[in-house]
Image 1 (cartoon, rainbow, N blue to C red):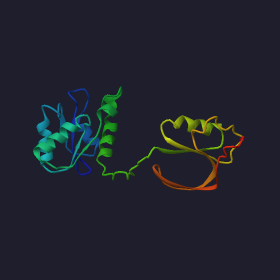
Image 2 (image 1 turned 180 degrees about the horizontal axis):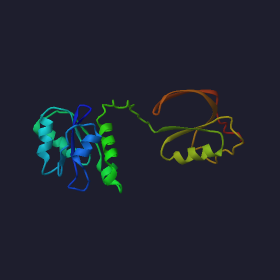
Image 3 (image 1 turned 30 degrees about the vertical axis):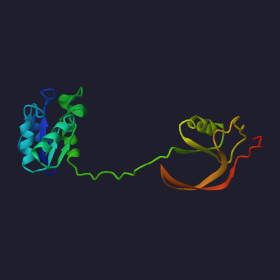
Image 4 (image 1 turned 90 degrees about the vertical axis):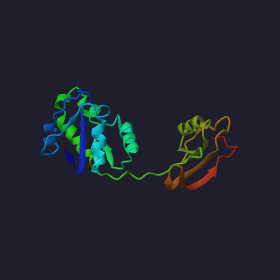
Amino acid sequence: MEIGGRKILVCDCEGTMPLDGKALAKACGGAAAAFVNHQLCRAQLENFRAAAAAGTPLLVACTQEQPLFNEALGEAGIDTPVAYANIRERAGWSSEGAAALPKIAALLAEAALDIPPAPSVTLKSGGVCLVYGRDETALAAAQQLAGRLDVTLLLTRPQEIVPPQRMDVPVFAGTIIAARGHLGAFELTVDDYAPAKPSSRG
């Protein structure tokens, strides 16, 4: 059985999932019945090796034993692309597992899609944190974080706020009007920026 150019290997996990190969193939748009393995990750591991050796991209309907399958590929020197789908916990083992065939077919179809990985950004925090607010809530948050991070408190249009008894957090006034970058590497533009006066009563 194939979906999206991938050969599908399914397993009923030692009979713990009701899988009808003919009905599954029909639900997946295939003509011939799908062969249902009983113990693909152990006694029938050779079925996986043989399918991988054929060179057609594979989709294995088991995520639990993915490390074992990858190890088998490495030992055999096979570089066939293999995708994995979890049909057991997400469908076959559910309380409605006997009626889960359409969902299993959908999970296999989804896993067969070649979805490019989402872009990622490497984040590096130097332990620096800016707390932005306008009242005692912001001050309390900054003080709670101060033991773990290098915190600066920026108060925008501050209401009347009692200064802390001990200035263990640098306090500034100002309003952020622009922000660029991302967590770990950002720049702020601040209007009316000014440090808190040590002699200020408020």
